[in-house]
Length: 114
Length: 113
Image (cartoon, rainbow over all chains, first blue to last red; front, side, top):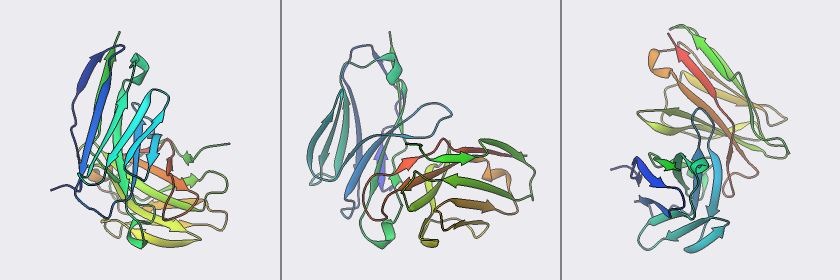
């Protein structure tokens, strides 16, 4: 079983839709949670970072963490064609074995059509 | 503020050769880590450097190595290239090691023929 599981999609939605992206993880030592967006042939771009259970909002993006269920989500409101990309959840632990190390989900390919 | 800079962006090498990739972290960031991204395996952690010392290592063979210089710039080297080494190699930097955000560069696309 992978440490981080993410539905690879693909996910196709109309412009203006609310998008929900999800990941589950197995290691309770994971403490820091990130979402990245990656356009084709580009590096991952950090969207959201959080380290506590609950919601964190930034513009059209909301990151949700439920540590008791080991479940994280990213919601995109009013989705735009420019949001079409691969979305990656990434998680890191604390302490020496986590130095610089993110464990990634497989990525979800999202297409927002006009 | 400049982001993480990687060079070269694209390169083609022959099996058996070696390659060196370079990374300049965000100014003030002291931790540099490297990742390999392939369609089949996704993003996998290679190693992390802090203060010129390798502090963490992923599950890759010894052909993969790296180093960090006193100005925090880093290089990674792959020796005796194999076809399976074809991938996007990503460098990432963060201000500290154990917490905080990690920012990625655009990557170096390596094709081994």
